[in-house]
Length: 169
Image (cartoon, rainbow, N blue to C red):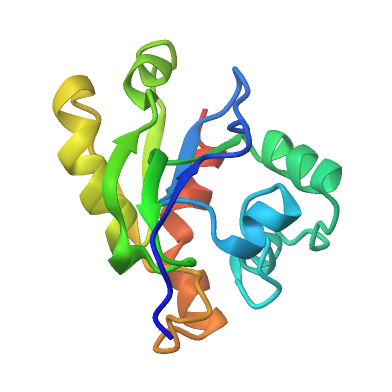
C-alpha cells in the first residue's frame, strides 16, 4: 500500500542566538524528529555525532544539551521549509513547499554564514530564500543515514568550513 501525502507544519522553533556565526539549514524535520520534537532526532542521523567530533565535545543527547551545544559553538539551526506536503520523511516527495522567513532573520545577523545539510536544503534555499536576501549557501554532504556514501570521517572533513565559520571572530 502506497503512503499518502500529508500536509505538515514545522513543529518546532529555530535555535538562534545573537552570537551565532553560522546557520545550518536542513530541509524539513523527519518523522522521527517530529516525534522527538527536535532537529535530527533519528538515532541513525549522524548530525549530533558529527558536531561532537568536529568540536571535540561529548555528544549531546537531550534537547537542552543539544540547544546549549549549538549556542556554545555559535551555530544557529533551522530548516528551509515552514510547511510542505510530504510522504514520511522523504525529501524527494516534497510538494507545495512554503519557506521559513529566513531572509528577515539573516538581515539582522551580520556576517552569518549559511550552510545546507544536503543538496535538497541547498536547492530549496537557493530557490526561495537567497533571491530575497542575497546570502549564499554552502552545501555540505547530508548527515542522513540514507547518505551511505559518506562515512563519519569523510563528513568530518567536508564539514570543516562550518567549524571554521564558528571559530572566526
